Image (cartoon, helix red, strand yellow):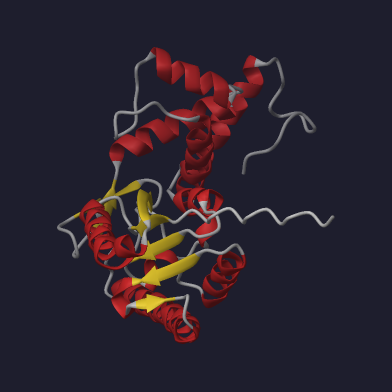
Length: 277
């Protein structure tokens, strides 16, 4: 006798929302995305028997990264099962790369998961929805490229008129109002940097530097403890500035020779330790 086919298990019908903001100061943007998604769910998906589950978000996350490379995006992808639905308010909240969008949505469709994009009232269950997704993914990628191009042009203009274009380099800090900032020397950073260079050339390790700063309760401008990586960068940056200053190279050579003497090495003898010029 032929076995009776077991009835197929009904697919679960859970709804998930995905939200993203480019900076940590845009928490209101994430909350707005959540509210819009909930309203859409109540109007469109709840009557179809779907159940609201949870929201996955990625605050302070660039849209340049692929969805599965984000913490919230990866958690969402792992949570989905056949019959589920994903809601995003705009396509650029989830994707800014056409290839990423098409690959992810294709994988979801093979798993029985569909997507809703609110600003275009797009549902990937329909053939027209699939076509529009392909078109919109390309538009989103073009928009990201345009934003990047405008950013490069803006930085080039600000650089040409002597205004700050990015985070202050070593030995400087930003001054002035937002949108009209410029670089000024930072005496505190230079003082700590010279201390690092001096004792590093005299034979101390970065780990010894680190513990010396801890014991002296010397913290950085943000009130945090220094890291060994930061001390390494400070050494490189301070050496570069000292080489450009009058007498800086001679001062570093003096510190280096003092370190050799402390270790019982004659600085005038060739072949003992690196030479500072």
